[in-house]
Length: 537
Image (tube, rainbow, N blue to C red; front, top):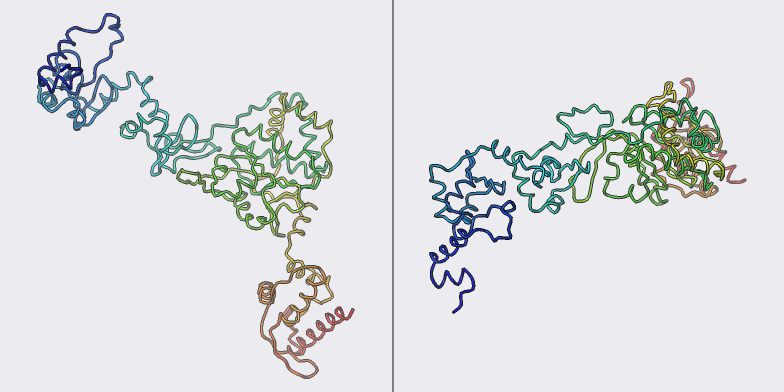
């Protein structure tokens, strides 16, 4: 029977025959066409050999026991192995002989790491050690090269052969989750934290001031056009844009809302193209999809955001809480798919653009938005000027203009102007019961603003809703809402000598010199007379 491999030889003649042929091949040396300089050390063989020459001598040269450990360092592969793996590879007899030999080497971890570092530039493990930082106690790592958080599963897929070595290596870097910060103010301790902010990418044009900002004149004219050339509005908007650039990382308590039914006014051109070129990677243009998504990683590391038509009609009221928190919240929760969520400082300032008369509802007491209604379309001449400046240093010059602009007493807490456009959005947003109460209190309705029974007021409210095309609330809801603004109590009142008792809204306390029942009775009579007159008319 022909013997085709070492397995057949082993079965036919025994292990000693195999060893004899292997040693003969080793003594013969490499083939003549192999370069000795390119010869690499052989790994331990399954037959118990350790490579070239005498097995035990080669093992003594190649391997070292790590001091205080049960692990073995392989100087050829520059790797660390467990003893169980070495026994399986070398064989028990050779491994035991190596372990008991008086010339067996012992190395400390310091020596192991130093030895490994000699050829670290070409070792994927050390590239991993330098590039990735494990974030405790999450399943994420910080990628220094990408400047981003990556899941460990992605890291394992990226370098499958070295992932385990990286996880077990003593020089692997670890940082607490709270010490991964986004701090544009540059106040975080550089020794203990990783700051994900690397600076505004655009370099301002320092010559712009001497040149009277000619390179960005079209850009500034576009802003004036959007503000309808109202100087007070222009000044407020420019300061709003300038403050976070003069004080990098400043979080303003306000946002800009530019909306108009005029298409092509240039809102996106200015707030989207021009300002985004200044902020670079720290700016984003967002839509409804991002706002409604369960994942909020789009908010991470943003200084400036433009929201275009972010709310559908069905979501206008549902998302207002999210919008308010984005404007005034100091921190925000970042959730990313397949990555553990984290808390991040909120340095984002936002601009909202829309072509609807009511982009989202505003309350009368809201002080978060400066609302502007651009009245005209953008002329072709101005659009061409802005396009030319965008390609010829205009954004850098405008950036310098914003850095030079005097802020006066403007601060992150400066309240926005009460523009006509803002009042219009508020009016459009008011629910019908708010309009009813406002007009009743102001004396603009047939019903006088005096004490009355809650039932009389509700019946009048229903008739008012019918005439104005509004859908009325239930009596319980309306009375509950109004009871937070007026005194509601069960009172006695007298009409034509007859006493009645009912739940009432007491608008003004009766004068002490007059009986309360009589005063309330006269109020109820007058209210019913005025509202009945309206019904007859």
